Length: 525
Image (cartoon, rainbow, N blue to C red; front, side, top):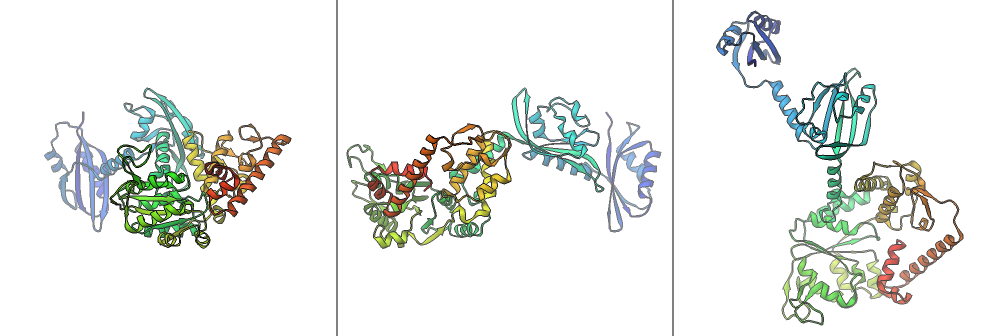
């Protein structure tokens, strides 16, 4: 095996330096492996790698053979040339990024393949550089189409290897020189498992942050900026907004950026029966009531100590618990049911409601002192119909998430479908939009989602004949079902408008609190 020598020669810069070096190397029966010249002011730094024909030629002899060149100021051996350092850095970067990368030259020969691409294609032990991509097992020759000027993005591919089935999305582009001539092509592969893991990471509610909020509306940006500013403080935050605007996610983001080490404990004040509210919030001692655990139980205030207690739908609290919550917030101490001593708690309080608290205070339904205690830092989240410019980007965001979860080809919304979304009133806000997009992604079996796949709540009474296609004429029985559905919505909406709370509205309608809440969710009220 031949042994090459790497040298650094420093010259006084002049014309003909490279020619003189080449002649001297040839005269001494050596081959030039590589030569690189860097000019710095009046000096020329030459990095030279030579391979002597005489294998017994020593390093000292090589130095002597190159000495005496006109203008040579110094000469020394080096371990690596600048080009080698760049190549090593380049390959290290390529092998440590999270995408598989393959590039070819103008003749379709592989010029680059990084470690992840070798893993995906199960070709670790093969020397692929210089081989045509269409002659290599497990390689997809589609990349050759880019040499004709074509390009593709988000193309789903799968490869069967000895280690199992690999699924990934791939993007490819031609490589052009300064004149626009195509000199090669590059393909970038993203492993499907990594995309799914990323989606799950982003969509985990306990890991939510303000970076996960999608939207460019000024009202949303202002709310996020204000929340970021107050997140590190211990002050109480009151989040106001219609149902479905993302109040809990916003509360989780505040907790995530508060740097509090304790847990985020959410509690829906309207979902807990009155008889269990106090025991859930404040806990109980052993034997406090029939059915109590023998060891007692810590309440949510205690469980959230060091973290954040999120009191959702706080406007639905009965007067009794309102008074006890007020004292717990003021004193930062709670007493379990049946207990004699109080526990100190350090829970940051965030409340949320879709009701008009000021009106509830005027009618006496909500305690005025509690209102002033929780309304220290109010944040108002705008409804979706007030930020129509965010609907396209939100729709694309949800569609990408759903496609990844379903392991389906990436879909796109047609202009007609997008127009239908923009002109909808969105009574269910962002939550309703997410449901509509998920429904469309499932019903449509093509990559382009048409307007017929965009179905709102009032469309669901119409039977679906095939995936993505809605039946044209409506049967008489279905028309009756739709009318009954619309009538029920009107009755529920009227009862909610006239009642002071959901519980009171349920009593007037003669149904349970839980049943009414299900109907509210059903009709997006």
